[in-house]
Length: 208
Image (cartoon, rainbow, N blue to C red; front, top):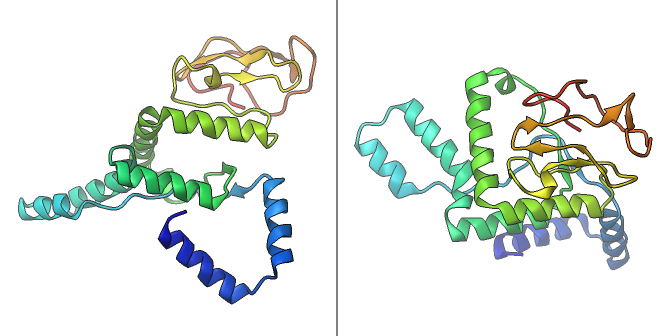
């Protein structure tokens, strides 16, 4: 935990004034819980001020500057060692198990969504080990259908049956080979499978 996170933690403790027993009880509950974040949480990297200054001096438009700074915030942790270290510490300190992305006004902009997808994909490409570990943590806390997207060739990119361990939805990148679920049950052991999926595989269907 870095100094900034420690400082904010101390502020929270001074305001809330929990007893040691409260802290220990809360940590135990957190450890044994699935923590969902409902607003697409992901730590942001710092903007490179020198690069932005140079762009301004070269006559970059407001739209170009906005796109540049958003790109830095969403991808610089994958390139800069210091930003990467802080990014990983922020994830650990947050204690978030899974993320739910809300739909909203910005979620209706196709161009904005494509840019964000490209930036997240870049992050997963550059930090494969971190993403693979994130999948392992999800499985350890009891999530059934965790898979590591955007990592072609990794065993974690498939969806597995939580009961028998067989592959239910084999993937390679965004390409699905087949869907091995029949009447909402695993075709191998018959276990009930949650989720909505297509009967025939496609590039982005059959997600669990």
